[in-house]
Length: 102
Image 1 (cartoon, rainbow, N blue to C red):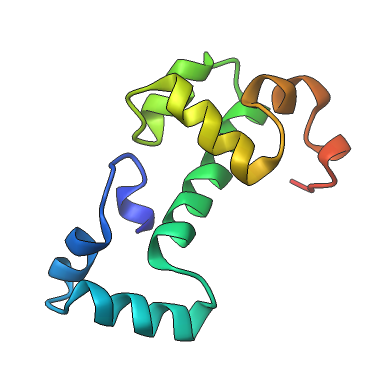
Image 2: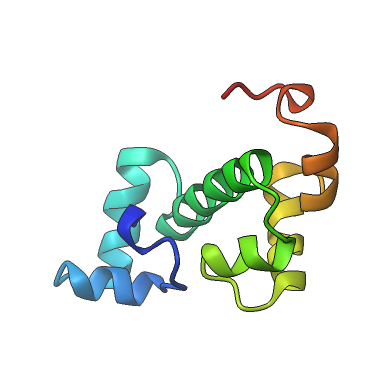
């Protein structure tokens, strides 16, 4: 997953790469991590987005593109769902105010 953060993968595509079914991948992944493969993949993307927002002056749309989201508005909705604030506000209030450490 980490090697494909700039892509939009489905669980079916992830499973096919491992020559297993999507349902089996979901089952074993959830047993091992407590999360679905897609939730984990999105969380990895959000971690990269946070670093880019914190460490660069990249435009939000370019951050979105960097992690595989073609639509910056969709990226902003997903980011807010996972981080509880918009990418703009995250950048504005900063890393430490969010209770996150570098």
